[in-house]
Image 1: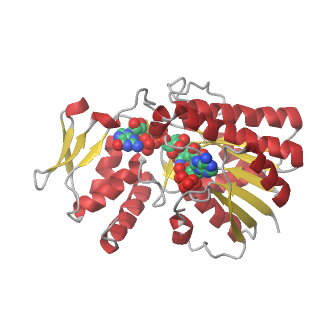
Image 2 (image 1 turned 135 degrees about the vertical axis):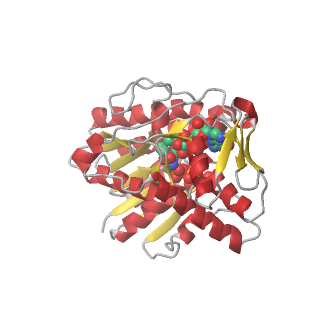
Image 3 (image 1 turned 120 degrees about the vertical axis):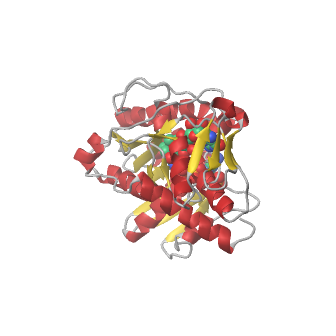
Length: 344
Ligand code: NDP
Ligand code: GDR
């Protein structure tokens, strides 16, 4: 039986990856950080909370000594470092905390591997945010980086230190540069889930208007459950490496809004532009979306579209869920949640 540590089990990817590894007969140690009320809703949702092969352990990414203790006690075969301060918007308000957690957090685990056992395989959750300002279209493993947020900069440090430990100490350390991936388990602060939850509430008359920031931003959105499969494949490969995972399709935030409303049979007409842009429900004439500049970022990543050819040819990883299917799945789940739970 293989053993894996997944940092960030309470997050979207951590929950899906835990489910995947349990289905492959792993013993999984999922880490969560101590808070007044820890939230395990995602692993409950996936029905793995009480799996006998899942152990939940407290771990804070900023604590280097507990990284060493955890790794030496468990001596896992694989470590997937998914925990991070992962919200780009917040990284502008908390740049130092983001650097400690998202940047140095990876180093603490790599150091623990170097000290305890260099045979432990390591996966680092890198991101398309490292590409930032457009240097090349589409973006691939060789595209130059130009991060546009404290989050992107912190992730770039974690990415390069992963490569450095691979090259310096022969550690099987791989980095997945993943483009945006979403699901019904996505956090409500991220734009897709914010939209699908609001669409459900508007449909159920629980909300009047959805307020958004930059609707011109373009993203390459895939389905999270397929992306965690790619993480797993990276650590089963013959050699450690860096891989892009993406769908090679990009759409604007506005397009995603349109798709989500369409999923509940509401057709939108967009009027105005910039801070004055709104969208109205064509059948009622009611304004249902408007721009609020408070959601703008000090520096924006305008266009992301990834080329995952390397992952396809070397790992046999191919995403199959379309953006339309993904969006419909998220809206459906948010409708269900909002119907059954008045507090949602
Ligand atoms: P989430 O935000 O859903 O999950 C992040 C996890 O990190 C949560 O479990 C969170 O715990 C945990 N965490 C935050 N701070 C700490 C800390 N100081 N110590 C320990 N744990 C901490 O992210 P996703 O699941 O969406 O993403 C997984 C990883 O992949 C992240 O590193 C993200 O940056 C990266 N990534 C994500 C992409 C995406 O589109 N989803 C794309 C590319 C990269 P808590 O629940 O307590 O907040
Ligand atoms: P992103 O995702 O920054 O790409 O990072 P997010 O969903 O937060 O933003 C995507 C784009 O939508 C624009 N936007 C808004 N975003 C939010 N959150 N809320 C709004 O109201 C809003 N209006 C417009 C943003 O400006 C942006 O352009 C995600 C995270 O999961 C990272 O951890 C991960 O590394 C990257 O994806 C790849």
